[in-house]
Amino acid sequence: MHVLTFEDLCKRGLAQGKRVFIRADLNVPLSKEGAIADDTRVRASAPAVQMALDAGAGVMITSHLGRPTEGEFKPEDSLAPVAKRLSELLGRPVRLQADWVDGGFEVQPGDVVMLENCRINKGEKKDDDTLAQKYGKLCDIFVNDAFGTAHRAEASTHGIAKYAPTACAGPLLVGELDALGKALQNPKRPLVAIVAGSKVSTKLTILKSLADKVDQLVVGGGIANTFILAEGHGVGKSLCEADLVPEAKAIIAAAKAKGGAVPLPTDVVVAKEFSATAPARTCAVADIAEDDMVLDIGPNTAKALAEILRKAGTIVWNGPVGVFEFENFAGGTRAIAQAVAESAAFSIAGGGDTIAAINQFHIEDKVSYISTGGGAFLEFLEGKTLPAVAILEERARGNNA
Image 1 (cartoon, rainbow, N blue to C red):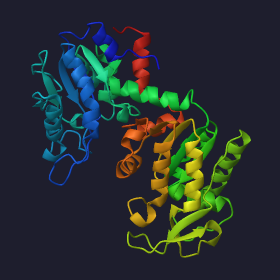
Image 2 (tube, rainbow, N blue to C red):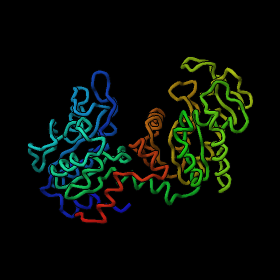
Image 3 (cartoon, rainbow, N blue to C red):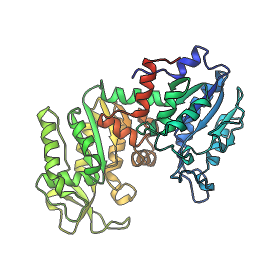
Image 4 (cartoon, rainbow, N blue to C red):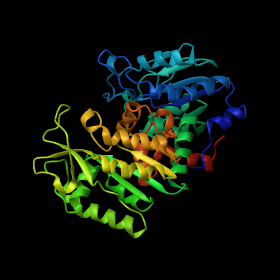
């Protein structure tokens, strides 16, 4: 990645007295009462703001929140709870600014102004050029620190980077890309990827891409059921995509062709219904009954996968291997989490369910890097170009600071 970094600008004294526009990912979960349920993204975004303040700049920061209707402001779409939490983290006031697209508000060195939910602005999601130009006129320096939205070309992530006098990457974005690059572009071997989820179809391109790169491709959740079916075993009434069995077989073959493997479950934990209170039964994959639902990997499989992870040089983790929210079916994901924590490998994890599992099993400080991005994390794994990063690279090659 060859981009101008905000840290470099600050070290060179180029942010002093400037108006800095930070696009962060502050799309936090809110309770029914409107309180922040998890402030991880706010805490992750605070360093960029502090960096700007320390450099003597005035700060504007914005983000999307939820799924608002463009052109229609509703109280539940407001970034007010985020502004309050950021103020607490920074130890200084954070002023909330509505109707900010056309300017008309002051930003002095030392100020922190939270610009209301950018997804309310007409043309934001379509990367409207006129809107992007207006954004660009608000600032001297644009800082993209929102890895979680880097896979989207929107006016506040992509368009503004074309028109701001200077466009650069914030510390969170740089950290994410460095960690992902370390994990995939020049990894310490063996490289082990854990890809789990409900459907093969949603992660098919990721699985294909990783099969060519990794030494071990661990599949879990509903995805694993399709692979179990591909191996000739029944999966009862489990979540499964029978039409994608040929694709699963092709992925297994591709991994083997390059000397890798797709280690599949030998035993599973099943139940007759999807319920937290459903009685759990452990059985070999060959003994899955027609009315069984596979809800977790079994202890023998968990032990085998844990051994693979402990010997890994690099681990990429996206998705829990079972219904870990239900205690009866949490054993497999707990074992994976513990193995990741105990491994000396460089580990990077991403995705909402993965982070929830990491928090549930208290291994936050044992994972080398926890990505704040969901879709961007997955698209990077696929090898796709992230538009918001590509425009920063383009600016770095052209006329930038």
